[in-house]
Image 1: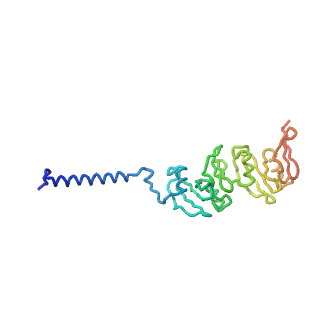
Image 2: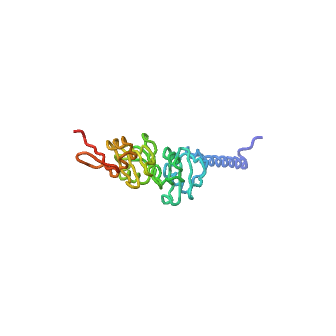
Image 3: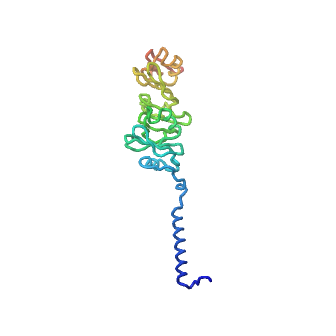
Length: 254
């Protein structure tokens, strides 16, 4: 015999089933995830690393974490993400703010020993340059990247000299090599618009154009001219530069 719908007990049982169904539906609705949340993070992201993760673009920029937050050198922490970026943090760097580093700049930094190398920790996230390109600042220097030059580090006196010429936005442009060793424990670096050479006796000097071409033809700092001891300057209607072994002059065609 079918239950009598007019029976009060039957009505209460039916009402209870309706309430239970509505409760299940409400729970399922609460658990419905947005597309971003649907890619549940396999590892937690927290603290200063989470702050940088959110500020630098969140899930859309970083994707999922590829490892748990892990120890880095000298008491720091780091975490890697699936969209070719990492975040590094040290309590004494950037006032305790973590910094993102990725792509070709991160690869170059890795070649130089990560945070254990001469550059140590990043002090900025990756940022745009004034000419099309990217850069990160570090405790020990800088890495600049452009599509035509790749990623190269600058540091020390050569970096300081380049900075006085407005970095990549100045006449030297982007670096096209890393810093390399030169004669008598000196160093040099080539840029799009010239070179900077340094030695303990001469300091960091810029050399470019026709004077640089002449100096290169004489075997750079290893030839009879040695290192430049001045930057290029106006001279008798042309340009000149002084070297340990003499002067190189340039005059426009008459």
